Each structure stands twice: as structure tokens, then as C-alpha cells.
Image (tube, rainbow, N blue to C red; front, side, top):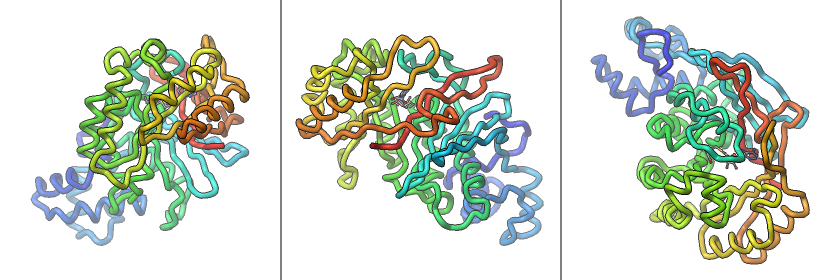
Length: 367
Ligand code: SAH
């Protein structure tokens, strides 16, 4: 935990954890709900302002606890309404968070790690290596801060309706902190987001997918990117450990006993002449035909020194059409926020000991 003081930070605690904290303090468990509402719904971080709590408890909380959050260092707004925030963590690392407003929803794209331990060849984060996991408070603070900026009056209107863990990092390799943060997102005493509107994107850490299915109920997106093991081994090296067959079986298991969850989203980055031919599309259709899934085609966003190029519009349309004809629901994500470098593959956080770092964030727009 990147904390600067000895005090317990309450920002990243799930309800269970906060209840345990109050019981340890010799207080009643229901205090957890009161404090969570103050922090996450009313945006209050100063215990003395929590007026439904007795003065003596407020004083005690001030002694032993804090609501510490990272610092917002930069906000940029795109002409198309996309906002991007640069957030500095207490150890000097910076991460970025993006908000994408659409007609019927507002989506926040958040990070789970500083860097990434996986080595996907088309991803700029991979080139920077892995720095560290984000703590649960660093993950949830991205929503806390975005909400403060989007809704300074903190009205009950929901501006952030969807959260996607599609920023920097592999969320399932920071399992405990990510699950805690998602519990806070879903908790009615905090953000109360619908379980259909919180999406975790993974490159396919199979055992953690099975764990997730039991621990917290969220939507799952899987970075597939190739229709066969030979190609996926190259693009997503994690495939050598958990090949496509095992991955798809884990996806099917994820939907078991969840009748309200109709499908997994399969992400497929469109790389010119690498994975975008009609043959690839037919192979992908065969894999997904009888599966409860939909495909999200993501036009590749190039970054300096990459060996890949974005597929042409025609190639992407042709690919989509083949899948569509085979009965596989397929949409193409639309890039937004390019004017502030907020599109997928364009984000730049600052990592300690580095002057600049390229990040990628998936775009949520669909065409
Ligand atoms: N590690 C997780 C979550 C982060 S990546 C995962 O792999 O799913 C989220 C998405 O960003 C990936 O599905 C990938 O499709 C996309 N992505 C990464 N680099 C990209 C790039 N340069 N252009 C377009 N999409 C990219």
C-alpha cells in the first residue's frame, strides 16, 4: 500500500473490511455503512464533516484513520466530450483515467497496475515492463476523483454509469485489490453500479477467471486477438500457458449458473495482414459460433516503434461481415479523444524513474 502515514486508509475498504475495522475499534459494524456513504457518495474525506457520527467517534477516527487519495495533476478535455485525468500516486508514479460520455451512458476506463507483467506484442504498456500493483484505494480513487470532477455538486444523477478495467495492467494479476475495488463499485452504500455495467478485461488468466466467477459478479471481456494458438502464442504470450481451448472453456464456465449473464465480450485488435484476413475471420467464426459471446473489433492504435499497422476500414468491415454472416454478434469500436491523446494506445502516464510512458486504454465506443 502506497501510504504516507501510519493511519488506516478507509478509501479502499469494502463493506466487510470496513465493518471489521470498526469492530476492531470496539465500535458498531453499522458505522461502516455511514462512513462509506460519506466517502463515496458525498465525497467527504474529513471525518469532522461526517455529522451523523458522534463527536467522540469523529475524534477517534481522526487519530487512527484517514481517507487518503492520490493527487490529480492534469485534466484534459477533448472536443468530443472525452476527459482524461493524470493522477499522481504517493510514490511518484502516475496513471491515467479516461471518461467517455455517450448518449445513453458514461464509461470510465480505469487502470489496475502501473505497467504490466504480460508481454503482448501489440501493446505499448508491455514495452515498459511491470512496476507494481495498484492498491484497492488507488483503483477506487479513479472513480472517486472522476465523479468529483464530472459532478462537482455530487448530485444523485449518475454520470458514470459504466466502469471498465481496460486501462493499464492485467487486473487478474492484481486479484485481491481489484476484487475489493469492484465490490466497492457494486455496493449500494458506495457507487451502486449495476453488475452488468462493471467489466473486467483479461488476457486470459484461466485460474483467476474461475476464482472471479465465485467471488464477485461482473461482466467479463477477454482479449482474444487471434483465432489459433500459433498466432495467439505470438501476440499474447500468456497463451502458451493457457491456450485458446482452455481459455474458451473458462469463458463458458464463467457464464454457468448466471442466467442473467448472456455473453462474454471477445476483444480482437485489428492488425493489418497479421490477424485480419477473411481466413482469420472464418477461423474465429468457427471458434465462437456456438458460444455465448460477442466480438469487439478494436482498430489498432499505433505507437512509436511498433511493428504493426492498423487494418484498413475495408478489411475491418469485411472481417465483421464474415462473423456476422456466421451468426456471431460483432461490433467495431470507434476511437474518440484523439485530440487529447486519449485514444487506445495513446495514453501516457509517468512512471517513476522514467520521463514518459506509453499506455493503452481500450475505447468503449462502438460504431
Ligand atoms: N490486460 C487486460 C486489460 C488491459 S488491455 C487485457 O489484456 O484485456 C485492454 C484492451 O486494450 C485489450 O483488449 C487490447 O485489445 C487493447 N489494446 C492494447 N493495446 C492496443 C493498441 N495499441 N491498439 C488498440 N487496442 C489495444
